Image 1 (tube, rainbow, N blue to C red):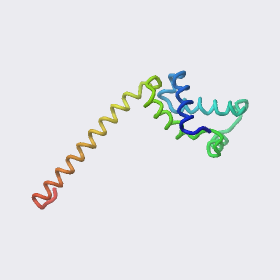
Image 2: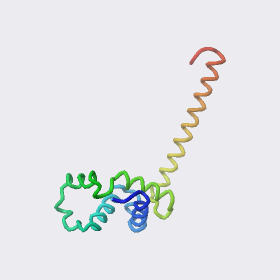
Image 3: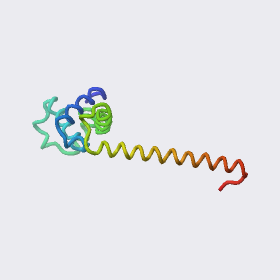
Image 4: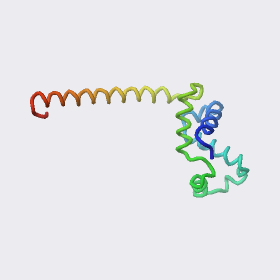
Length: 123
């Protein structure tokens, strides 16, 4: 299991080589976990391991947590444009829309407060 800075480097390597993993966290996790097992000399029995054994490996820290891999992917794509997939731009556009909506809601809330204090009644 790697710390976040090492995980970002592993993720960067995978994303630069595997275009499908750029927009697919499950594919990214699959590749990262396989490489972690391989480094530990455990890749020979992966097809015989059960899903429960895989989850136990995550819980015991034998391989990285999916949340760590996702966090590293987000940071990696933020820092390294070559690792971004097709969904990155649409996510950033959506983020901008949400921020604008929140700003508008805050403005309306402040306007309502002002109106309430002027008239002494709440709408």
